[in-house]
Length: 200
Image 1 (cartoon, rainbow, N blue to C red):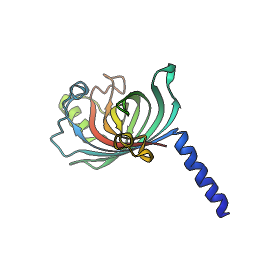
Image 2: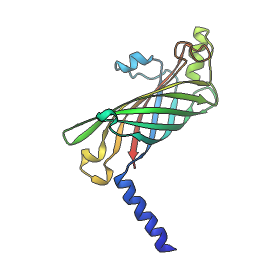
Image 3: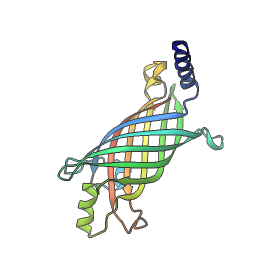
Image 4: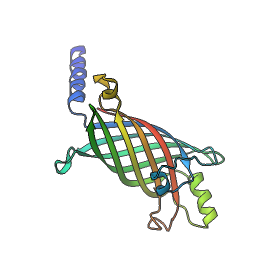
């Protein structure tokens, strides 16, 4: 029995090293009052209230080098915990498809990522409710989800092969009603996050 368990363990280690079909991401971030466009242009200022998020996302590689481009497509899902300031803390579940454009140079890899999907929160997020109350707009727990990211291969940077495909980067978590398409919601929320992601 011990031999069988060791065989399975070593086989999985070999498969992990050579396939890398899966990914796991740990992230921490803070809320922003800025809209999506302002953040993309470089304004990463935080929300006046102390609003934080902790997130865990997992993914499965659907297609590598799609259309012969250096672009990979993943199917992903995640769970997040929102540490609210004055409201009750809440949870989020996300489900999305994410594309990574891989740029290789200087013996390293930079990935630009963009994702589209859906998000459901147990309660309305504090930043979303504050914005909705100010603008007299509706809110919803179920909204559109975007995930924009940029990262680099930390293992290649330090020259430690076992850490190859361990990426350190920045991601923007964005929930919105897409100008009213989701339950008439025009607002949403943005969280700037830093993360560590490993392909295995």
